[in-house]
Image (cartoon, rainbow, N blue to C red; front, side, top):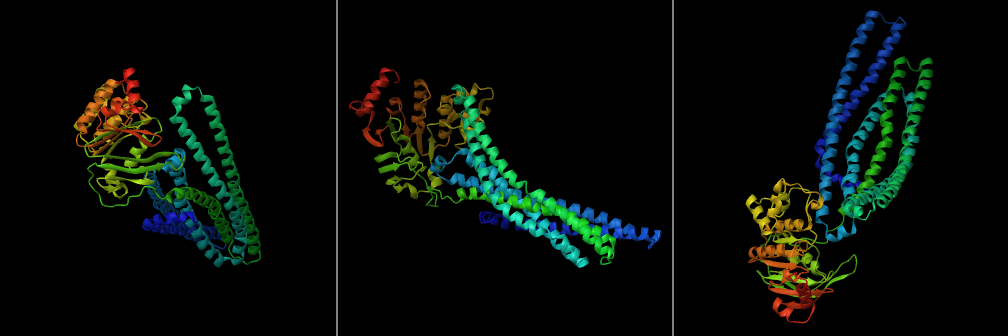
Length: 584
C-alpha cells in the first residue's frame, strides 16, 4: 500500500462525496440485513401454522406486514445501492481524470532527454492501462470493501446475539481464507507488474510499427514484422496466463469455504434445534441466508485484494515518472519581454545518453534584427544551438544570454512565447490545416492565418484541397508532401510573430524557386526580429548578416557571404559545388 499513498490527496479532495457514498453503502447493507430476519420470522410463522399452533387468521395477520416490510427493505436497499454506485464509482472517475492530468502535466514538464530514454508506447500505457488499474482501486475496491466490512460487522453482531455457538461454526473457515489471501496477494503483486511491463512493450512495438508502416511496406517486411509482433504477443499472453492462474485460485477457494459454512450451519443448527437450543426453525433458515449473503463479499475479498495489488503495481510504475525532477526548471517566476540580443560564450554541450560532444566552446553574438545562418555537415551541432536557445536542453559549460540576462534566469514560458521554432522534422497534428497553423497562435484571425500561409508559399496549395483550410490531415501530416508539411510548419511559426525566429533546415524539401519565394517573405517579416537559419544550402544563407560554419561542434568559419566565398574553406567549396549543380 506504500505506493498508493500518492492517491490519498485525491481521496481528501473528494472527501465529501466519498463520505456520503460510505454512509449510503452502510445504509444499503443495514436495510439488506433486515430481509433475512424477516424471512426467518416468516418461516417460523409458517412452521407454527403447519403445526396448528397459529390459526389461519393470525397467520395472515402476522405474515402480511412481514411481506410488506420485506418489499420495502428490498426497494430501499436497491435505491441505496444505486446511490452508492453514483457516488463512490463517480469519485473513482474524478480521481482517474485528475491522475491522468497529473501524469500528462508531468510528461509536459520533463525534458527531451526523458523522451529519448523512454518509449512512446510505455508512456501511453502508463497513462491509460496503469491509471485504469488505479481507478479500480479508488472505486470498486473501496465500495466492495465497505460492503464486506459493514455486512460482517452488522451480521455478526446480530448472529452472535441470536445463536453464539452457531455463529462461531459459521465463521470458522474465515481464518483459512485470510491465510490464502495473504499468500496469494504477494504473488499477484509481482506478476501484475510483469504483465503491465509486457503490455508497455507491446504498445511500444505497435505504435512504432504504425508510425513506420510506410517503411515496413516499402521494404516488404510485413511478414517479419508480424512474426516479431506475434512473438512479443505470445510472451505477453504467457505472462497474463501466469497471473490468471494465481487469480483463479481465489474463487474456487471462496466457494469451497462458503460451502463448508453452509454444511456447518445446516448440521450444527439442525442439531441445536433438535436439542431445543434453538427455539425457532426460522433461525436456521435465517443463518443460511446470512451465510449466502456473505458469499459474494467473502469472494470479493480475493477480488479486491487482487485489485489492490494490481493498482499498487501500476501506481509504482506511475510514481517512477511522477518522482522524476524535470531537468529544465523555471528559475524565474516573473514574466519578461524579450528583445532578441543573443550571446553564446564558450558554450559546450555533450549529450548524456551518447556522450557525443555536440558543441565545443562555441561563441557568437547576434543583435536584435540580425539574421544568422549556420551551416555544416550532418551532426556538426547546428540543431543543438537552436535547442539550447529554446532551453530544450541546459548549457553544461559556458553561458547563453539573451538581452544581457543568462538564459536560465529568464522566465521559461516568456522565453518560449517569444520564439518561433520550425524543426527539421516538420511535425503536424491529426487535425485541420487551419488548426495546425493556428497552433502557433490559437486566437489568430482568419486573415492572419491566410497571411502566414502566403508568406510560407503554401496558400495556393491549401486552396486546391477539397476542403481548403478545413482539410483534415492524417497522422503526422502523412497526407501531405514533405514540402507542404515544411511550409505549413513555417506558417505556424510566422503567425506567432515572435521576436526570435529559428528555422532548422526547414526548406530542404522544397525546390529552389519556392525556397527563394519563402526567403524573400521571411526577409520582410523578420525585419526587426532576430533570425537564425540552419541550412545545408548556401542559397538560404547568402543574405544573412552573419554566417558561421560548424564542424564536430566547433566554429571553423564565420563572416558574411562575400568574405566566406573569397576564403578557402568549407563554405567556398559548398558554394562552388551547389553553383555547379545549379542549386543557386
